Length: 431
Ligand SMILES: [Zn+2]
Image (cartoon, rainbow, N blue to C red; front, top):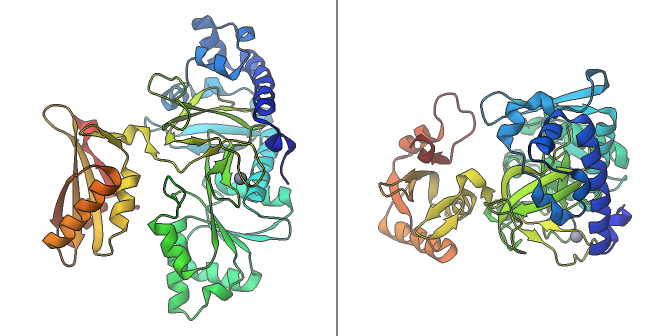
């Protein structure tokens, strides 16, 4: 189930997207108060925006814009809205997204071709291990996608390893949809309860929320831990509510494939110009075919690399590498640019590290400082120099590293009201 356009030549794909862009610009100019105002105030003649290269003439849309003018982005009347979704905003209040019947069909199509990209067929059964309600879009998209594809789906929801295993043994799903670190919990539960994970019939997992791979597409420490115990294929999927679209890995597992009929993807530098091929930049998207709340040049805040070489699966579409990090978490450390996930990967490699927190601050001359606080059962100089060597070899930086007792680290990781452990404390915002 590969859409024809994804097998077409790069030139055909580009032309196809440019035609779709025309439709979108006309639609926004007609229906979106926000974009009507933007075109007017920047004196943009939409009939002059013909190619993907012309997009740079249009100002980008930020998360702040979306929050401040939320209602103005809505292009349809209330009667046509079916589903309401929210995402956390930048300024406290959630941002509301509204989906029409057509948007739900588009979402179903998006997820069906994304599942198919990761090898799921209508003979498969998937077990959904994420939330389907709570005003989230993802869980609903998975359900709609499975239905569109004709695959079975068991909606277990997040957590509860006991119920997950009960369902796996009862319904024999072939694919799981899960946060990868939760798969480790399932493995642990299985070990403690005499369940052989490799006899479960599960052959793959569609993984969300956490990266599976390093930038060269080799498995990271988390994925290695999973696959050492459980012989399943791990497929990364990257998606967001704003995009209404997913980028799933195919069987080649060389990045998430772009679906050109659903979204235009630009990778931009700090001045909102496209980066040179292969460089890291901020993913900026333009939705195609969205009726309720389409977005034009929306900056996602995610730093990524595009891969444009042909893929062995036959698709000619661009692939996105693992998210390098969030733009606002970018650290400039002694001439090197880096992001927290790369440091997490290094620290996760050390079994002696029981817990850690990365603190980023600004020093007196205004540049970034990194201090990594580590808890270990056996803190010693050899471990310290091993960790430092790893940082130098992999990231070409040598941050300050301190040993602390486990209680101190836990207090830092779980401040009052926090349910998820905090691995990054960014003090720069307070300056
Ligand atoms: Zn592929």
